[in-house]
Length: 618
Ligand code: OTU
Image 1 (cartoon, rainbow, N blue to C red):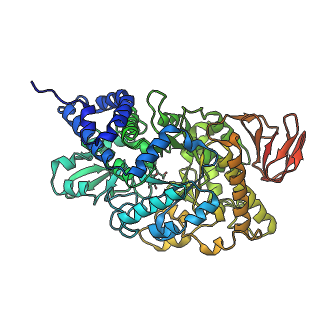
Image 2: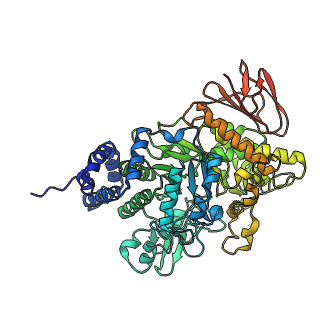
């Protein structure tokens, strides 16, 4: 009688003896969730058991290929699962090409990152991208090969080794919602391979697409309207949530899941330590829904998490789910079934900008209040800007009854409405009364680009520090966006390029300006002052355990709606005046020390326009 080998024995089969005990132990911990989630997703399909066995064996093979150095790192991280919540963690995010030209150029900037205190580097997509337009590399043509213009796979291995030696973890995008229309899967489908066609959602006519579009929204309504693209080679409509050349993967097909789990582990073996799971909200489609945040999308992520925990346990998953505040916490999963270790807090980011524009912290206070405590070994990601737009729709819940109009006012402010200091652009909005997103470098949005007088410069810098102060003190892994440390302003050159002109996100994707770097210590130029002030915040934060991501946070009442009073632990207080007028604040009893200048204060204090204060009680 033949017995089907168990998933565990299939996992262990490819492993050398010394790896087996640990792998079996980790498998035992993940087994319940892994089998439950995969069973729920694919258990009804013929051949499920055989598929599962093959999946486990391929996971085993990828685990066996992990280098001794990465295996050692796995063990260290397993022993200290909350390592990334420390107050001395600091992230930095950038495009490879814009920061260093190529991967070797990025390696040459490690000294700069170290000076800033960076311990985590998110490089935007660097895998082989679609030929021609590629949405900044978010249309991936190969999960195995580095984009030739940025270097080779050997350069990637070199870079990850150098980063590890410098104490910096590399984060890479894992673009799992879609592939480029010239990825071999899409090419195969176009050439008539039925199995590869089943990697995608395709439809013979507009009947189903039209039905879906009754309830599905649009991410790029102007630049890429609709969610489906007619592909002549297929004579079918293909689901394309983003640009027409980004084909959504069909996760109802278990072969897609297995392929992407393999892609993840392959990259982990090249030294990627954190995966930014792009567009996680969109992974599962359901008729009659908005096809976002579906329960199956969470099952998929929990299964991926279990696989990472078995085969590359040092690796972290980060959710990029740009969704309304109430939908965010689900991306962490639960104690029993953890999902992502980290998730972007896009509501916090947008509400910070909202508070600046409104000179009122209402949105921000609501977002903080709606941010639940997290399961152990999980943390939020805080940021001031990133390569994308500031999406306003995540705040619709907080914005209230006239929400759309209120958010549209904020968006108009950032596209330079009369009287505004901001120099940004509306993104994908159909009219000025409709908020979608806003683009622009942080410095341009905060008024540094338009500043003429000494006071205008000073206030723009203060506004930037307010937002950085929030990201650094909120209790999260803060990630700086390339150029923001030096107050770089908008890059308008994209308007001259046919392949970019329709996408104003390129405003905030400038080339790193080495000349500003020369000013960073001068204490006089705007760049120098911002850089020094930011470094001071980073250094002060690193010394204060109350600012660790997992330390308690509480909002204190403030007399003025313009003031945010955020208490961390028992004795650290961040006070932010989000308005252009001076404000009073009555401190909790006792004497407080200003962490930034060493002075002591007590009782009622005055906050200058746009002032940030970090106070501590001994
Ligand atoms: C992500 O973004 C990436 O960050 C973008 O750069 C890509 O263009 C996009 O995916 C496609 O790969 O919906 O939840 O509104 O916030 O496109 C993820 C613009 C996303 C982005 C949105 C986003």
